[in-house]
Image (cartoon, rainbow, N blue to C red):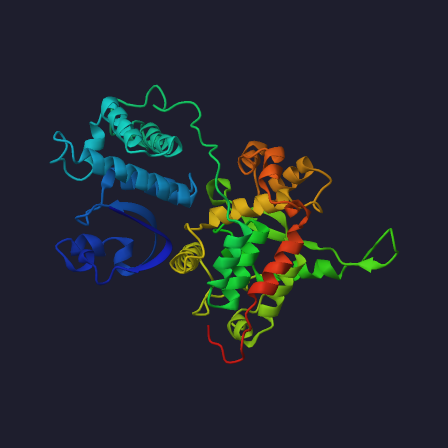
Length: 420
């Protein structure tokens, strides 16, 4: 099964089956008949036989068009419902059920057995609870309620007493962060300096993969302008530059597709590395298509286009695979492991805050956590134990110092004739 999502996409109906089939006269009587070029916004679930599943698709469209849920949430719910459909289609009572009609009769017992099979397959409790939450929302907010004055599509609700998996799942498992040696190897296995700059910024700032495409040229310039401020040292009365700059981030994780702005700290050396990339003919050639620095991407891919969330994920997959094949790292590194690695780097940097708890508050703001409990998930190892796990003298290294060493070891020259 696959999910199709489009927002504001132009669709030409002049060559469609509506305009040329047996319902041609009815189509021409509609407004679209005179103006066949229409704007389409919708979301649908399509099965393996290329049939649209109407019950699920109407639910997805309602949430997607009206932005009742964030786009990523709608996509996630669509996939979770498709997993339930695929599982129930293998059961004798539903194997001949057309399209998604089985959702009108599947019972609480069937869903409980299905969730139990997920447990037996070794899926994490958080994953199972997430699927249960999606099914609860689908039945309770769409299939089993009256919409637009019409009777409910289903009279009984298997979720009338709430979710099956109540309470908190054990979601606070320790995530193994990307270490500095692993980060260095990933950057070394990136083929271009622009990719290396971006990887260092992601780790240094702790931004999410979905937030990288929103970082613009102006954001980098504003952060660099902060370095023009002169601070006077109380000890020697000499102007000094700060080791870090505030970087404005257009954050994800907002409700209903909302952008949540925040500020995070980035090392000066990382920003200077990006500035050097921005001064190359390669970047200038692509950035000329944008007149406004607020709309100019901070990074372009090999085709001169702005990065997307998917292309950022693909970059991580490529460099991880190269590093693993060369036996420089032993595991796949994801953007989320970068985020956790950035958190530990901040928490162990003695120049950021007077104590660990002050740095924890800084991490909460910089990573865009709405709740301190989320921040605590990035510091599952207690600080005193983490100190014992670290190598001797490792706590004396600062975040900015680590980024400077990384830059010195991994910088690659961009030549005038480079096209990628």
